[in-house]
Image (cartoon, rainbow, N blue to C red; front, top):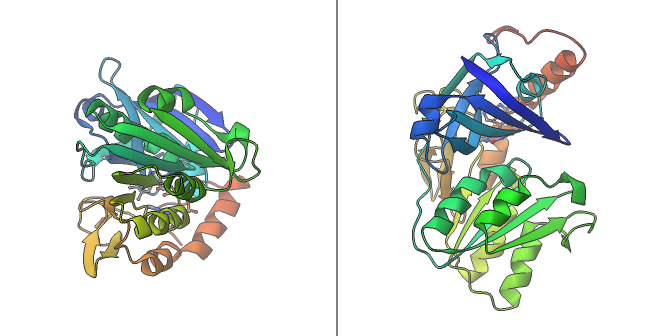
Length: 282
Ligand SMILES: Cc1cc2nc3c(=O)[nH]c(=O)nc-3n(C[C@H](O)[C@H](O)[C@H](O)COP(=O)(O)OP(=O)(O)OC[C@H]3O[C@@H](n4cnc5c(N)ncnc54)[C@H](O)[C@@H]3O)c2cc1C
Ligand code: FES
């Protein structure tokens, strides 16, 4: 059903173009799907980075971090995913803000693209800032350049753009006097927190797409519970985007690492040739 029609890889980020016509026709910027590679796989959320209503396809960027993303990474063109459910989550709020900064790291480089594109189409000035460990790890650049007034780079080894992270570039441009009216960040939790702290002293409205653990993705199971501004919210239906200045990062990190031991054992065993364990099996 959900045939993989195109696949490529930049280091351990895998671009997967998947046939999913109904989703391609109804998805909006900021939404995600929940995917199962095979019948026995766990359900994992992935942001839809792009879509094409003519071909009925959606584009996912999958960062290989554990057993389920490795299973997807091993699929070949012509294989089919067992399930792709969506669109899920609330779409991003696209306004006429003025100057909007997007920050993306790891899978977030692909995930910021549709929101940046929608903001550009809404008449905003778009500055995209992307980070990676070194120069050749950047991807989706041509597309990002096409929807951005400026693309700035940060690399850990200094081989491209500023040596450092997205928040270092933001601090630099803010110190130069650039006025930012709205910020969006997608990437690992540490990056989201650091970038939110960088915009806080300047009171820049800051949206972060949270990547809490999700199961059903429809507000029923409570797995994705987060605290934002002292209130309990479900990232799958109330988010995934929230005010980065109000997120309880400590709680989010604790909840995200609840299954680290089991995830590590499953990954090691699968990467050494075992089958994907059945969901619910020990
Ligand atoms: C709304 C949303 C959008 C996302 N978009 C993308 C994307 O576009 N590309 C991408 O590569 N990743 C994305 N993620 C993260 C991705 O879902 C996890 O990396 C993936 O589930 C890890 O599964 P694993 O078995 O490979 O790794 P594991 O070893 O099981 O886990 C590795 C890390 O992923 C987290 N994780 C594990 N299971 C889940 C789960 N069911 N739901 C969420 N997080 C989980 C763990 O807390 C851990 O930090 C998104 C997460 C959310 C919530
Ligand atoms: S994933 Fe179950 S409530 Fe959000």
